[in-house]
Amino acid sequence: MLKTLDIHRKFGDLMYFTEEKKAKLIELARITEKEFPGQNQYYKRFLAINAFKANKDVDVEAINSLMKFMKMNTKLFSPFRSNRFIFSSLLQMSYKHPEDAFIRIRDHIDLLKANGFKKAQFQPMMCYTLDSLLFADKIQDMAIQTESYRVSVVEKAKEVYEHMKANHPWITGGDDYGLALIIAHANKDMDRVESMYEGLHNRGLKKGNDLQSLANILSLTEDNESDIIERVLEFMEISKTKGLKINTTMYSGLGLIALVENDHKHLEHVIEVTNELKKTKKYKWLDKKLLFMFAVAIISEELKYELSTKTIMETTLAVTIEELIMAQTAVMIAAITATTAASTAGSV
Image (cartoon, rainbow, N blue to C red):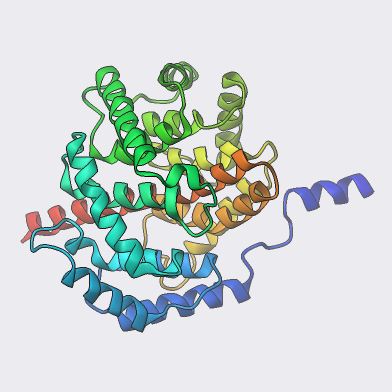
């Protein structure tokens, strides 16, 4: 009897996403909807998710002020201008001094351009990722905050990206910029990434950009390649048995969970939160693949807490996970928004 009870506890019979938590998220979504009427609906929901997981309020005045600051401190055709809302909300949540952080982030773009990262729509998130990895308030390593390191990691990121492009010319694009940077910062071997890609495909996963993203993410772990692949497949099977089939667009979110755990606790919570969001006011109209990424974002606080109590390397991985979630979610939202816009234009 005791053994059965222990199993039930492990697999979370008790609700993780309680009614109280749902009510809090709905209220945050209501605030973002009311206070930012002209902004992208997906990014407004993303802002509410970020505030919820960080246990913060939505500071409407601060975000609006930062958007004005960004407009005043960018040129007319700067790619940051069209992304002011999402970056203002991210910076306001993540930095004690967001205006100083933005000036630094804005200036990273010259280094990216000098190293061949040309696609303007992907440059702002890459700048944000670079800054978060090196300069976020939680980073204590002064050695990586030097100009020489910043130049070297961007140069390395270009090498990583070119390696991706050489192996997968038809599927590698600007949405891979962020992962190239993270792999460069983590100093991972690209041969391992390619081996991971082939290993996942050989076990039945469809080739394509989503699989490349999954292989890139999984390469960040020190785990044995066969072990991490088995874990991903096991997690996919568990998700399926619980009514959540993992399609290709959800690979990156699944990879983030698989990076840091050997049991199913966090996966169970992600499945629960995804299903509950699908029934929750303000979120139920969203595509399930985006809800899955939102659920991973919420559970990431658990992942980061567990990692931050361990070694310096794992603490760095905790920061990396946060940036991966931000970057992957932003790429997904941008793709959904573009598809929606194209569909709307086609029906006019």
